[in-house]
Image 1 (cartoon, rainbow, N blue to C red):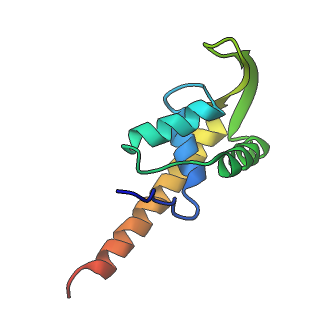
Image 2 (image 1 turned 90 degrees about the vertical axis):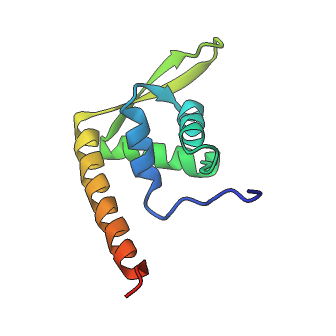
Amino acid sequence: MGKKSELLPGTLDMLILKTLTRGALHGYGIALSIKRLSDDVLTVEEGSLYPALQRLLLQGWVKGEWKMTETNRRARFYTLTAAGRKQLSLELSQFEQMIAAIGRVLQDA
C-alpha cells in the first residue's frame, strides 16, 4: 500500500486514550505505538497529535509530567486519569455502535 490511511474523524482521542492504557508515554511514543499496533496503516502527524493531547489535558482525561526519555531528552509523558478511563469506555461504546451500524448498511439485503 502506497498511501497511508487517514484516521476517521473523532477517533484520534480514543486511540490516544487507548494507547495510554498500556502506560505512560511521550507524544512521539504515542504516535509510534499507534503506527506499530496498526501495522503501519495509521500515522498520527504532529500537527494532529499535540493539539489532541492538549485537548485531553484540558478535559482532565490525561495528565502530563516532564521527565527524561531513554535518550536523555526532556519530554512530557502522558498518563491516563480515572476520568480518561471513563471517557475511553464511553468512546469505545459509541465507536462499536457506529461500526455495527455501518456494517448493517453495507450488508447485502
